[in-house]
Amino acid sequence: MEFLGTWLVTSIATFAAIALVPGISAVGGSYLGPIMCALALALVNAIVKPVVTLLSLPLTLVTLGIFYLVVNALMLRLASSISLDLFGSGIRIDSFGAAFMGAIVISIASMIIGPVIGS
Image (cartoon, rainbow, N blue to C red):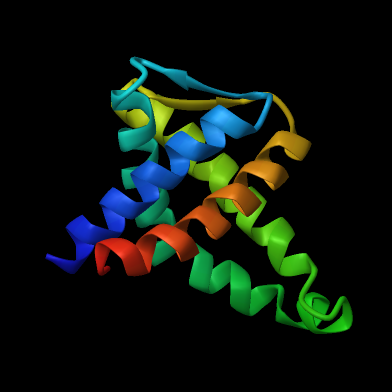
């Protein structure tokens, strides 16, 4: 049940990123795209992100945690690519800058929405 709550929060946060960040758009439907991207993002965050975070730990420490934002942007781009290739719908990200800003918006929106929904 916790996974469904996290998926819901990430889906809503992805909707916010599409609305707020130029360069991010829904593909495959205005509702289905963000929902499928949120599913891919949950899978990427569970499987790939821990490994990448561990490997980038020295660089993250040197930059006082700023590089972690780059890791989040890369995970969002990977989730976008996976959702488009695997599900045929997701979000299209035009540039790394858009991915960077989208990752920040998704993180902030998830921090706000998560406690409200209770996940």
